Each structure stands twice: as structure tokens, then as C-alpha cells.
Amino acid sequence: MQTVQADRTDEDLVAALAARDASALEALYERYGRLAFSLAVRIVAAPETAEEIVQEAFLSIWRGAATYQPGRAAVRTWLLSITHHRAVDAVRRRSARVQTAPLEDQAQYVGVQDVWSDVSASLVRDEVRSALSRLPEEQRQSIELAYFGGLTYPEIAEKLGLPLGTVKSRLRLGLQKLQGLLENPNLRADPR
Amino acid sequence: MDCSEVEELSGAIALRALPPGEALQVEEHLASCQQDHSSLLTLGQVASLLPFAVEEIEPPARLKQNLLAAALSDAAAAGGAAPRLAVVPAADEHPAETDAGTAPRPMVTLPVRGRRLWQQPGVWAAAAAILVAIGLGAWNFSLQQRLNNRDAANARQAQALTTLAAAARVVPLSGSGGLQLAFAAAPNGTGSLVLSNVPAAPAGKVYQAWFIRDGKPVSAGVFNGAGVAVVPLQGSAAGAQTVAVTLEPLGGSLLPTGQPIEAATLGS
Image 1 (cartoon, helix red, strand yellow):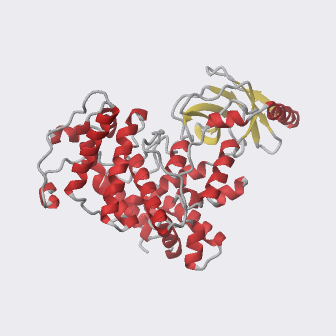
Image 2 (cartoon, chains in turn cyan, blue):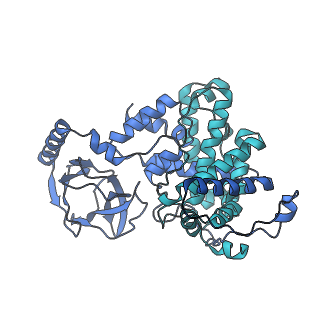
Image 3 (cartoon, each protein chain N blue to C red):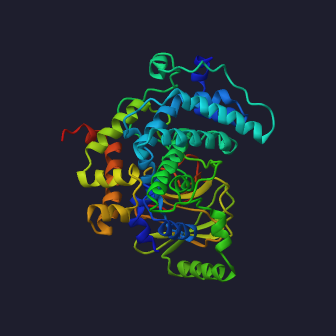
């Protein structure tokens, strides 16, 4: 049974979710549950809260599967985006700093062209980690405070004692540099 | 908020690091702005890769059990046919030991050696999806249309006439798309597309303009159609033999994903 599940694409699984096939939900969880949980734990630093977040993220896919558009293989991106959104919201609610717009219980799928759906997860992981390590420290720090710390850019500025414009630039330039590093294998191959 | 401010915030937008008030301002700007803000999509795609940077942790077995139970309960509450469920193994107190070597592996395709993540057609993510994912809500082209009113329509008509009057040359496009488009080239090589009653792009799609030089297309920008009279194109037509328009996924594409629906020869 599990071998058969492994042969189904993400699109197949989401289509099955729309047909209320819970075995497809199980298969999707087997594929991405670990990554989603790891992301949630990284952000909220509380395993039990991370469990709730991941459960809600998958349930959002379950409920919103009917909106999925075949041919747009972006289920992984969709799932991780929801996970990140909920995790950051949890961090911000906990600190009662910023009120964010809540996600609907049923995540509306809007087509996202997933450029790396057919690239092995381990390759993506290696490339992303390598590229992050090659960012200037100040850019990497700001990006991590934003994405994994759930801080807004004014909060990052306050935390680091920097002007708002400096933080905005670091976030923008850091992501642009990440893009360049991911696009150019020669840059990735160059020793530091 | 203007375009330059939005671009300055592009990193913060992609990382969902905007305070709510600014997020709303960005959303309002994007809903009515005709300029190309595809940098938001690119950086959003980059940000979407960040989860892979985390150290992976095995979730407890109860997470899957609770999820499946909640899904069954959810489906039952919603009514309809009972969901199908595979036989679920009994709970195991040591999920890591149980899962190792037995969990189904996802189907993956090993990449061609040296392949770049971004070297695929359609690399631009759908604008609306990225913005939803980063908490800005849907970039709704129909909202753009609702924001248009008769005065705005008249202003656009005037803009189109002004552009035509100032153009060094005007080249009508033709093709199977049935659109009334003309390329108005300024003396310095820049140009605009002048639209006449061009309908909105189909749902999930956007029009994209291209300058084609020696057979190689270079994006000149995206536009939706309805309510827009003039689309300033990015880049220069200098050296281009053809200007063309294709239908692309929301947000545009790195390279055309289909044949042009309208095109015009610009000459040497």
C-alpha cells in the first residue's frame, strides 16, 4: 500500500484529497510532514505548538484541495507557505507584538509554478544551505530574523540598532544574492 | 506608497516581514499599479526555498494520527461520502526507529547535472499565490477592474493618443489572438504597446510582451488588458526584429511557454 502511494505525484495526491481520500493525506504527510514540522519547530521553538501548526497546515490543504489546478505542481510550496504563515503568526501572537491577518481555515490554492518540484529535496537542501552560508553575515542574519524569527523589518532594525533603510536593503539584497548563488553553479563552486 | 517604495520593501515583502499597515499599503498599490513588480515574485520564490535550510526533526507519531483523525472528523462534519483511509499502523513509541527504511520515499527525478534551479520555463510564480503566501492577500485583477471608473478610462484613452502622437513609428501587431495592439516606438528605442479594447487575460493568465532579437525572446513586461490603454515596455526595441505577445501564467514567464498570439516585424 505504501509503495503504491509513493508512485503518486503530488498532483495525484491533491486530486485524491479533493475526493476525500484520506490515504492521500497520509501519503502527503509522509512526504512533507517532517520538513513542515522541522520548519515549524525552527520558528516557534516549541514542539507541541509546532505539531498544532503542522496539523492545521495539512488540514488546510485537505480542505482546500478542490481549488488545486492540475499542472501546477506546487503542493510542497503551498504547504510550507501555510506552515510558515501559521508559525510566524504564533510567534507574533505569543509576543503580542503584531496582529497579522489570519489565514482562512481552508487555504485557497492559487497556482504557483514550482520550479524545483522535480529536483530532489536533498539537492535543494544542499544548495540552499550552501548559498545561505555564502551570504554576507549581516544579510543572512537579517533574513533569518525575518523568516525564522518572525520579526518585522522595523523590529529587526530595533533589535540590531540599525536604520530602517539598512534593514530593508539587507533583506532585499540578501535575497537577490541568494538568487544569484542558486542560479550560478560557478558561484556555488567557488571556494570562500 | 509608490513603486520605488514597494521595490525597496521587496525583500521584506517576500519574507513576510512587513507590519500589517504597510502590508495593506503594498496590497493597495499592487492592485492598481500597471508597472512590472515581478521582482516580488522572484524574491518570493527565493524565500520559499528557505525551509530547506532547517535541520530536520522527526515529528512524533501522534502528529500523523491526530491529523488523520482530524481529517476524518472534518470530512464527517462536512457531510458527504466517508473518506477512504488506508490501514494505519498501530502507534509506535519510537517513530524514528519504525520509520527508518520503511517510510515510503517520494518520487523524485534526479536533476541533470549542472542544472540550475531557475533554468526552467515559467519560473515566475503566480503573483497572487506568492502574495497570498506572504500574507498580502490576493492580487486580484478583477479588483483592478473594479477600481477603474469612467474618468480613469477617459484618462487612459488620452494617454494612448498622446503616446501615438509622440511615437516615431507605430507598428500594428497581428495574429490569432484577435487583439487590437500596436507597438509605438519612441525615437530612443523605447516603446509602448497601445491597446484598443483588449479584453482581460483569461483566468490564471497574463499577457506578456517580448522583444525578439536573433530568435531570442527577452521579456518586455506583463499586462492584463481590460482597462489598460498603454503598456510601457521594458527595455529597448533597438536591434529587435520582432515584438510579440504571448499568454503566460500569472506573473509571467522567463521564456515564452507558447506561440505568440500577436506579433509584428520591426525590421532591422
